[in-house]
Amino acid sequence: MKIHRRTSSYVLAAALSGSLVLTACGGGSGFSEQAEGGETASGTAEGPVSLTVLIGSSGDAETNAVREAAEAWAEETGNEVEVIAATDLPQERAQGFASGNPPDIFYLDAAQFGDLVAAGNLYPYEAEDNEDFYESLRDTFTWEGTQYCAPKDFSTLALQINNEAWEAAGLTEDDYPTTYEELAEVAEQLTTGDQVGLVISTGIDRAGAFVVGHGGWWLNEDATEPTANTPEVLAALEYLQENISAGHFALANQVDAGWGGEAFGTGRAAMTIEGNWIHGALQNDYPDIDYTVVELPEGPAGKGTLLFTQCWGIAADSDAKEQAVDLVNHFTSPEQQMAFAEAFGVMPSRQSLAEEYAEAFPENAAFVAGGEYGRGPISAPGMTDVVADLNSQLESLGSLDLPSVLESFDTNAAAVLGR
Image (cartoon, rainbow, N blue to C red):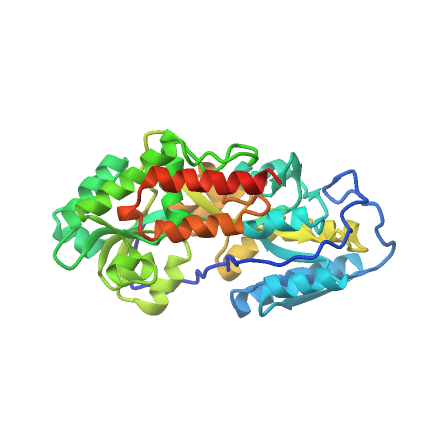
């Protein structure tokens, strides 16, 4: 879908990251059965209750939409709900757990999920029609066979193409790349003296898409063993490294840009790979850019992209788990997910809404299509520092001794996962 000088309502649904210090409160030890779709949970208060919902909001539109949804549920059920927009969500959530008074429901980023599971802070549940959530999203919030929370929404990566640069290189819609080989070919054609064909942000949150396309991943399927030092992962990084060395791929830091979107907006990149949040960023900072968004090309193992997601976490120490699950069922209902999409631009986590969403928001069709084949982020406990170390090394991807880097990751990850 071509996007040209138009107002976009899309904003990045904040993917909060970073280290999180958690104190185990012992609240997760008393529940041996998982609540499904509002099933009564052990220790739940009877009668009307007062729930607290802590969110990391992208702005007034998101805060107001969540509050309106919570108020509608409260009016229907006779309960009370307070929605709090955090200034620093991880810190405020951690303080709640440490004090023994956590919010009943909270946004939880995938990168922080494993640490809260390990600390015993999460109550495991499944929302209504759980199978309707994309499998990769459900897997992201599953540990040792137990799903702990319902996916809130998600983002994926797609390929952005500068239409002016594309036409100047003599390329047409028929030349949109569908394979990695074609991506390298058009990147070479788009590279000029002051513009690189493809510029991507550093780290596994971009390079990882090519790892998926090569059939590899950093950890095994149940996230119990590292698998970075494998032919598939090596081939993916070698593909990037070779094209960086050739000069028609670059990392954002190589062109003095903070991220791929900046390189794309300033014209230092003819193409970039970013998530659906790029619409709002370009509209705000580079409103005159004319661009097209297409799905990422296929790799040797097929299509691959990355999913970025949060879930609705419920505190193990909550005294109103049954009502909390019921509120999450309301938040994640098809009708409410589409209302959230209208209000602040997120993509629904229910696969049954993909077609309806793509029709309503055609500029995001390439992004929502990635829900079918995307891979969620690393969410295993204790992996934050290991991933940070790998990301630091990947800032110099073009000149790395890749086998040594991957071996180092596996060693560090094995030490953490084996605890």
